[in-house]
Amino acid sequence: MRARLFAILALLLLFPTVAFEQNKDDQSKDKAYIQQAEADWAASLVSNDVKVLDRIMADDFVGVDIDASQYTKADAIKDFSTHPSNFESNKVDGVEVRIYGDAAVAQGSENWKKKDGTAGQFVWTDTWVRRDGQWKVVAAEDIVAPPASEKQ
Image (cartoon, rainbow, N blue to C red; front, side):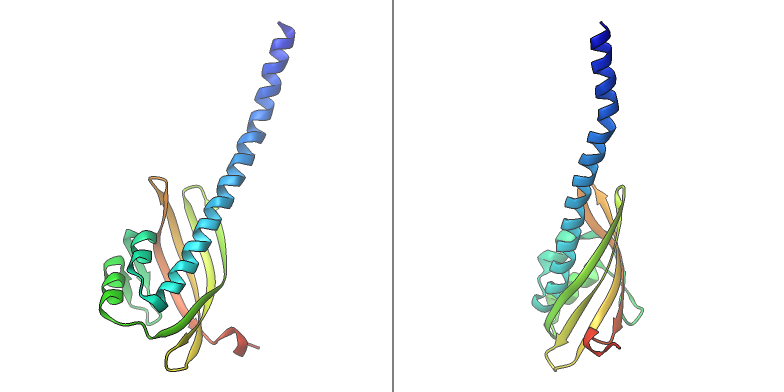
């Protein structure tokens, strides 16, 4: 009886450690997904791939564009569908993700070049929410900065 009680106590003490390790693994997977989704979103500015927007944006998404105007998921999809891209390239430089339960904040930057030869950098903060087991971006705010190569 005593050995059985000891075994149960040992398992109870070990359980929080196992749960914590599983949580760290889940967070690593979640961070990797969000980082990849951010890279996909950046690339979609070149390709106008509406499927990327549909996959990562929540239906109630609201973004703040570089001119301080607001746009929705429907606005972004309509813009991609009706206007050709003026970007030659757009690549994510880095994405830092912090997860808070079913919410996450992603901050990063991306360097772009337009077809007319102008270049620049977006710096942004995106808010993600996990709904029904899927991560969706619900808010975004972008600013334009000089390209990283021009910063001193």
